[in-house]
Image 1 (cartoon, rainbow, N blue to C red):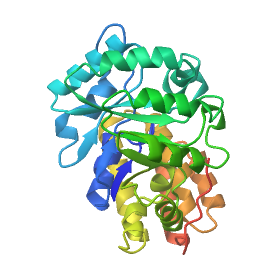
Image 2: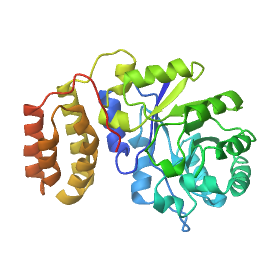
Image 3: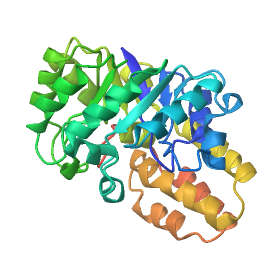
Length: 318
């Protein structure tokens, strides 16, 4: 089985990815948060830092692009090729309303004819292209036609989150539609969605035994040892999580100016990692209320001193 780390805007930038790779060795491929091509055809400083080869040494990293303009996609892919990348990923999965309103991400699925024309253009370039998709915008029935479109092109792999856009992250992933995709796809298929525990992973594997790749997202951020636990390498240790946290914090201190911006990044991460601890609500509130680095450090120290990790992970989707 190949294990992929899903991109998450605001969290899984290169500092986080490098820290994860240092302490947890069980992810095969990392995907960058999406790049949105701009009219001036330049990477932002954040995007450039995230894809620089020296910031991604030692890990298989695939940049993700989100756009509905083929010219922007092609320009971005060709620029990334100059940095040494041989594959890019097209984001057709993001359910955010601000993204969907511009017919980007999963909003692009609502206009399949335009999507087909877009794919026809981008698959003419000399670059491997994978696709991360939902199964439709408003109805799972849309996925039948979408699969017909995807099968027309040499997709490196089709990463499927079997929800529609309007589900966001609610409801249960539609395994019937995923099974349909496994059956009819001419391209390799990867499963993504609600694999928060080894038990959930085992059920997916038993249901879809031919699938040989999975993408882990929110569950892996909450429990960065999740892929290792799935492989039977033991459970997350508190001192391991502390060292991981400190590595991320140190990286942000070197690259982010001001406590406010630094704490915003760390608090966003804690919204997930708190779920690895027993009875974490009180300590979590202190972390979220901290206004400066000193208060934040005190709150984090108290959490690691007072609390223990859960004996069994019970992730609650956000």
